[in-house]
Length: 101
Image (cartoon, rainbow, N blue to C red):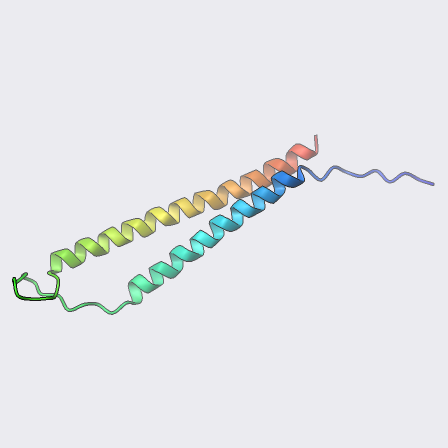
């Protein structure tokens, strides 16, 4: 009978955590893309260039400020989701390499 040498496949728990973190980051990226789609496909409210006290519509300046704030939050969330997904890939790769030693 011949012995079958088995290569160590790495730290199973570390690989599982790496995949889970990557999937978390990927799902966050998908959520950011969906939110961005809804933000940019939403109906544009009627704005008045000058805010009058009796009008219910927001002024042009208020609309632009809120749009910039929403875009800033989307950018930050996209960057954080990307960093989380990258960290998951690094955890997976490191745990796979550590098992080979």
